[in-house]
Amino acid sequence: CGAGMIPTPDRRANVVVPVGDATRNMVVHDWGDERNPRVVVCVHGLSRNGRDFDVVAPALADGYRVLCPDIPGRGESDWYASAADYTIPNYLAAINAMFTQLGVSRYDWIGTSMGGLIGMVMAATPGSKMRRFVINDIGPVIEKAALDRIASYVGRVPTFPSYMALFEAVQPINATFGPLSDEQKHHMVKTAVQQRADGQWEFKTDPKIGDAFRDGLKQTAMDMWPLWAAVMQPVLVLRGAESDLLSAATVEKMLAAHHGAGRVAEALTIADTGHAPMIMDEPTIAVAKRFLHAAPWEAA
Image (cartoon, rainbow, N blue to C red):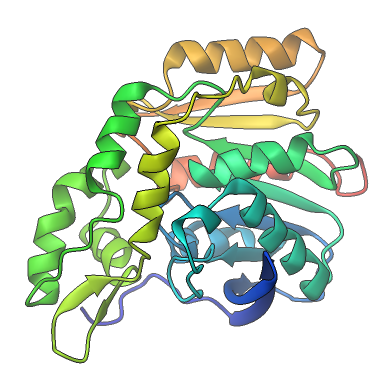
């Protein structure tokens, strides 16, 4: 899999993040002028990594510094010590450590799936410095069918004798990401895997993430509508037309709640796509870019 047209991040930052009494290293893929006070943070889904944004990030980097962390346990970042550490509060602590160490005060947010959930909490936190919020294929109601589907594969880490064997094996799972080019399909795989010393290929994901996810399914789901009601920022809700995780009805309710409170909200449904849109197609990138640039940076 040689180098294609998809660019690579301008820089790689290493951030020290707290977890309990310990610390871990979190890698942040960093695009654009690092002195630019306009910052957009792009946070990936449960078992993905910050390189998922290698198409949208350079499209935004003319106006923004774009920060795409590998949340701990994924990509180039360190793993946590136990499955119990893979929690939203620890992810929030990691993001806040990133802001402190990279000098970020205000920011916009693009969050896919898990990254959208983290973003909801960041947005709803009193005194939040988030300005605009793109939430990608997740909301206050998560459909059980999707949870069961994700639980069936997340954190199960088979090894493969070759890159192509691994690539072919994951195409049915990755098919829900939408109509990607061959280059984009390979990008999604090659940025998420590594070859081991014994020649086998594997994913750069901590298997304990799957354990944590399945443990979470055994607990009573919390009502997230109050969290959504506390999000004051203008929101753009992205949804895959065939998503099994975010229903069209939930999107309507999300918009109605925002509009009812006099807040800016819009939605975009992406055709031929399930969970979750990869934001690699030009029309979706154009809508996200317009939404983020719709208000001057100074305006809250």
